[in-house]
Image (tube, rainbow, N blue to C red; front, top):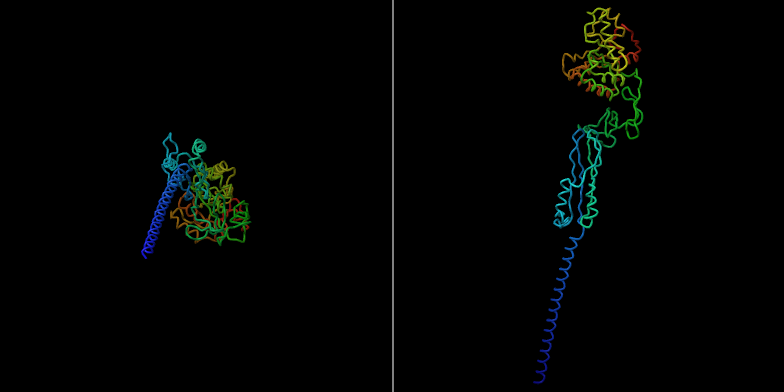
Length: 428
């Protein structure tokens, strides 16, 4: 019995010792494992640290899209540099003590590159802008810094927006929210026309007194002379006393809308604006004589009447190569002597806007609108700014409404009237 108890105790002690040894071994193994893991982590951390300082740093030099409105000054463009990574203090150039952070700051200050673009602020378009790295800088990047820095250069664009509005497919929405209708648009250096429904015109179309040809993309290719259509309503706008300071502006609008007008000029003003007189002839407007310095011809002797007319014709011919072919006597004053010595048809008017009297643009516009009728000859003066403003407003409007804006002679021919020297005409 005692031997059995002793054997059991001995067995229990042996098992306890065995378990203790196993636990001690496991503890030692855990320590070794933790130590190995820590060593591996230290090695890996060291590897990442070394790699961070040996791998090239990625830097992006990017030019963001810039926008201006047509007619504004071109902006001062500059690219932005950013780097990826966590090593801003990495030394890039020991001699210069230049770090990655310093290098990025230099790029952000505009160093090491120039911007190349050919933009015209007056022409709406999207212009590419290229970043051109300086020659010495490119060499340094290639020969010295290639293993330290990777530079990604991203070019940009400069957008010049049309001051009138924006394209929507084949329509053009004005800033007012409405679509452009019955008008020309200059966009991207090309000219387009939109019909009464706001649709861009292609192919052949008579607009005003011109036969226009547009390509499949709506770009104006050519303008040719078109005959006045006798069955359509027409108006003759006439301008006295010029040329003036803004006559050229008026001519530009007439040309844009393929419209004609008749200019009764004072000879003394012609030498001041020879280019305007020349353009009148070039765009199909009619040259008229309004005497040299605006005297009442009915109070002049025959030789004085002739001198007033001849000196004016000489000035006009000197400016554009041809004389006037119509005469409008100052104040509309006509007698037998004037008829005898005029040597040209005498043209008065059927509508006097009284622009010289009201000196008001709105009143002049209303006068034209209310009196517009087929065969009307409307009197205005291109020496007054308020009259020019009125004309600039009504010319597009009348054209959109379908009026043909013609010269006096064009109207007479369309109405079957033969103009004769010394005879007076006021409407057709």
